[in-house]
Length: 430
Image (cartoon, rainbow, N blue to C red; front, side):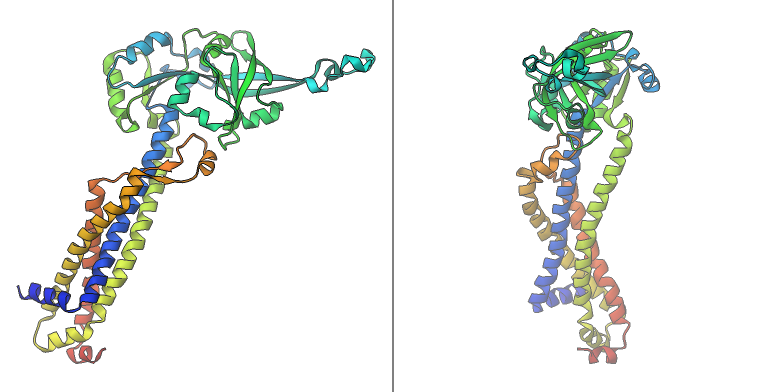
């Protein structure tokens, strides 16, 4: 009881020091709460947007993964419309999208090289390019998509830098990447010959509806084709190479996977969560590591400042420690007295810091932080420029506990050091 009364008297006697030390604890705790809110929100936002493109659960032919390099179109999901109807009856399923991955050859005829007839030039002196136009050919990866669903679910239309997303699902239009458009020398409204190869050669004349720019040179070579046209080009009526199934959040992908497997509708397909496909699992691990380092950096910054404050609080009182030991107070009781003060600092500062962290996190959670639409445009997918924080009770308790422990550790070592000095030497210190 003596230790508690002594510690409490010290806190009330040196009000300025008490206030500054308590504020240091509160600031450290509050900083960790706000930092954790932002970092958690950043990770949650990125993964939520990322899985808009990948789907929460992906369905493919069971042999697709082993054979996609050779004849990928032979390993497809049949009866897509019937399958979609079955899946959408499940309460866990919010949306179902079909896609076809295939390769195409695009041919553009540059008519600007044609010599007009009114020039009255002998045809025998003209080249084929001057008569028929210059032919530009490029091979590109194509994706058959459902335009309306892709717009609402994956926000691919947000990457359009010229023109627009498709007018409708029935139009023979394509959206091509900026790099592919540059190589072909085309612009919005240009006519292209789209050629695919499977069992035979299939072709269609299409119009460039829009040009997209993801910031990735590789992905900017993609060609997006309406799903109905893709089915015609590769002779895959009512068949797709992948089915993306969505629930209300990527966090519930495991529950969605179980519901799909239990339904019996996908018994003949490979059913994988978004983080089980390709390199996604590695990407998520790397992403989590980066987020962890960001959070550690915030904790280190806050704890270093707090430790410095606690060290100064104890070391500047060596004279007081000398007086106590000269009066017969044991070293152990001196250390316990300072630890009691640190416990009070940590408890009060932790509560104040938690309240401050709540207030500081509120605008991040409700209004978010805008990182800039132009900066986000350079990312390979259509991420929302506004990051909303995620605040959890566990984060508040964890930050408060961190501040409390650091306050005690910050007082323990200097108290040991100061109490080891002879009372006469300690009393000589200012």
